[in-house]
Picture 1 (cartoon, rainbow, N blue to C red):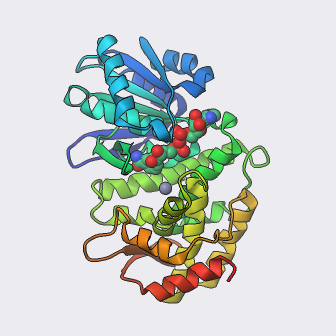
Picture 2 (cartoon, rainbow, N blue to C red):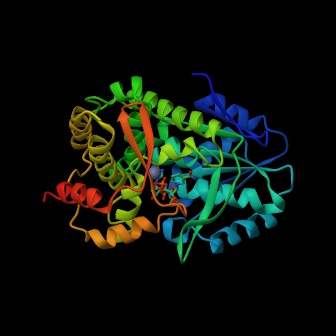
Picture 3 (cartoon, protein in one colour):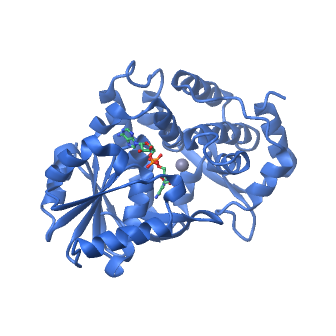
Length: 351
Ligand SMILES: NC(=O)c1ccc[n+]([C@@H]2O[C@H](COP(=O)([O-])OP(=O)(O)OC[C@H]3O[C@@H](n4cnc5c(N)ncnc54)[C@H](O)[C@@H]3O)[C@@H](O)[C@H]2O)c1
Ligand SMILES: [Zn+2]
């Protein structure tokens, strides 16, 4: 498959491509390369260091709770000790936590180094490693400190997914579902009846990953700094984020929360944008096949609503929702009445 390209207004570019083409591009970047990897992926570190021709490797214990400035400080220290200079390329190997954090360290060390991403989780391959948003969490909120810094190369390699636990598949499926809905067309059709590995073939998922990544790249190309159409990528995330926040992070995986948020967005779309009810029926079939929950947990609506109001993407003029007129036809809708949302949530809770 040909690599896809993201071009930003600042004239940096990202090549996103499959397998060897991508590794080759990383190898041929000028200067030296260092690899920073999620320590849990020990088995992949050696082979990837070789494929990208890295001359120094740092394995770091990372998870959502240590996605912090303190850990980035340790990355800076290591980069200093490893003799990283302005012409060094930093390669990140791991899931979204690793690519966000290593990307941020690369964006800031010596005022910005080239970096490349080798994402290993479904979520990172279709979303986190693409689009140049990098950053860390703070004690008062997720991803609040960061920078836009496009990776030069993103290597998509489905081989990593052979070791990905089921729960981590679920974490990435929300983005796949969202992309199928906002883009419609081939991706939407292809998701029908597709099972997760080992029942569903990894090769079929390779195509899904490519198409999902391509949709994000298309939208990011139009709107890197999220002033307009990049907001479509927030489909299912308004309720999804609020649910994660109210329940406490980690209770539902991100994909589970986005799946439920998508069902809410589909019901709102039916009421407010004339979406056919057949779409929700179909999406529920995919979710059941994949093992994503379709019943909303019993959260208190007033609490959920107060979190919605604090959504990072809420603007001073109110909350903007991404709804659908049809698969492939998303629409931004502002200021939906609280009682309409209440009715939908109560319905999804089985009430
Ligand atoms: N920058 C963006 O645009 C963007 C978009 C979406 C999400 N994110 C961020 O991405 C993060 C979530 O990403 P994630 O779900 O990949 O988290 P993660 O990096 O914590 O990976 C999830 C788990 O899977 C393991 N893992 C990863 N690849 C594996 C493999 N091939 N085999 C076995 N285990 C593997 C990891 O060790 C970890 O335990 C969040 O911090 C989120 O904020 C960023
Ligand atoms: Zn998401």
